Image 1: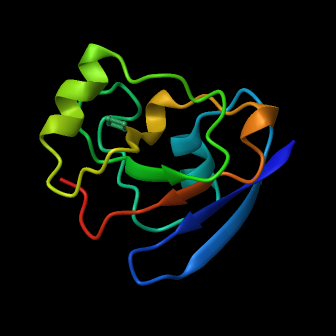
Image 2: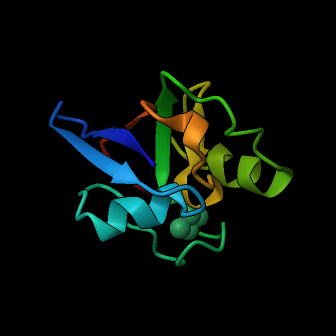
Length: 105
Ligand code: FES
């Protein structure tokens, strides 16, 4: 159990409680957070679940080659960019911030 704060590009914040084991993408969708399209349903094949992570990112691990290739296509990519569908939430991510890009492509 923990909380993630999603921050829209305009600064609007959505603080959402999570249970360990669910994906960051599914958490956003289940809680109506705007700005994550997730067109491929979490298959790491569309890049439309791009988030920029900040704060307590412990346990998120490293992006694999497939995820990095998708992120390469993302114009708003930053050093801490990840695909939300590839992040499985764990208790040590409590307090993490996921900023949303202006556009998902
Ligand atoms: S939902 Fe398509 S890459 Fe994450």
